[in-house]
Length: 217
Image (cartoon, rainbow, N blue to C red; front, side):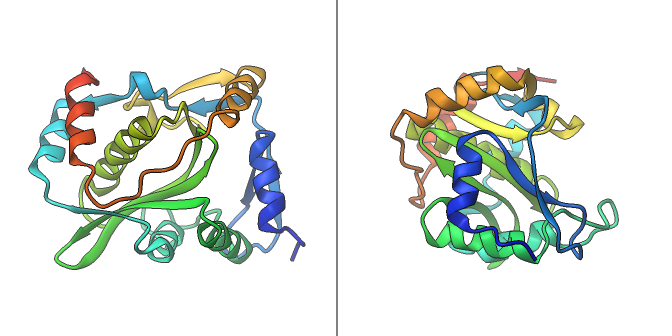
């Protein structure tokens, strides 16, 4: 087990690197600094017509920071399409510490009193580092992402880091940018004071996002 501490993890984020492990049962944690970085442009966030309708149905109760541990556990659990994850024991503890320090945040989808999906990440300055998401009901993580983006825009954030590009994220407008471009954007975001909006009611922000966002079929 390494001697990684939450304070060091925050310093790592501030210079553009993030931790990973080879697998949930691998106790070796290492830092990653991709040559090309995935980001989700907040002003170019795409919402498909189907997701727009799903979000407007408001089938899920959206909460923030009420069950950060539960979201971490959901992101770390094995599923048929993802038998292993990079969230090992040390990483789990580190992000719990960041949450307790006020840097780690979760957007949660609840249904019938149960946590059915969500995501978590780290807020530093006006940068949000998205870490992982999960769903136990169809579209739960997608709806959580819509609410995250709405909250970030309302809070004055300028950078949503997705680390890598996946087909899942491309549908929302995620792009890759060179490492130096990312570092420039990060440095600018860190100079901006922003406070993550974690109050319960974010629907006015979501409605504004649905009206302004680009649509995809």
